[in-house]
Amino acid sequence: DADVTQTPRNRITKTGKRIMLECSQTKGHDRMYWYRQDPGLGLRLIYYSFDVKDINKGEISDGYSVSRQAQAKFSLSLESAIPNQTALYFCAKSVQETQYFGPGTRLLVL
Amino acid sequence: GESVGLHLPTLSVQEGDNSIINCAYSNSASDYFIWYKQESGKGPQFIIDIRSNMDKRQGQRVTVLLNKTVKHLSLQIAATQPGDSAVYFCAGGGGNAGGTSYGKLTFGQGTILTVHP
Image 1 (cartoon, rainbow over the protein chains, first blue to last red):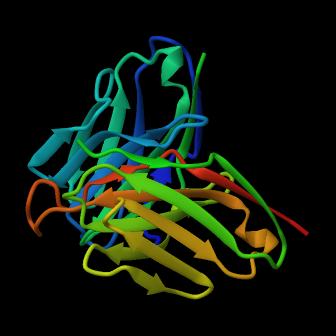
Image 2 (image 1 turned 135 degrees about the vertical axis):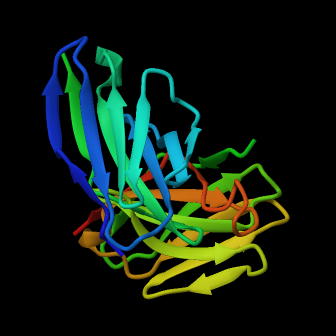
């Protein structure tokens, strides 16, 4: 099940800029997640959503916000990007207990 | 809370050998475990899962073993191929369907598997 898409795939931005990362899935699954991955580290949960009206903070939500505009879309925003937010960002959805991941967005904050 | 870790950060094997990647978990309430494979530049890809009421599950060339007594699981890859080179993550989760924990996973840091031809 690989219907999770992410845009953009790569992004370079400057400190202080606001950026949004988009995630979509087409099969109507309720639960979606945003993770951050840094070199040498595993996946850390930023935010998750169990349906359109349900948004929850993960372990590293500071500096990030999310929007679940529709069941199919879950966006991650950095209101004022800083260099230590340079990382690989993954969106995922769960089908029952299994999570399926998008291809990732590589973000560089200068 | 849950923590999931790995014994070794890297593993190098020769093509054709069997590979074993290990993982430890701390939360006794975890009842569902997954192994993911992440190739360079891609998102993690589901390999195989296992529930806590099982101690072994087999897939195509892969086997996952679960030892609940010592909170340990392993991924065995038979006849490892160069295409198996990747980072492998274990993840654990649990909870009742519809509950707040259901579908959430805690990930280990990953093991880098390198297969030499």
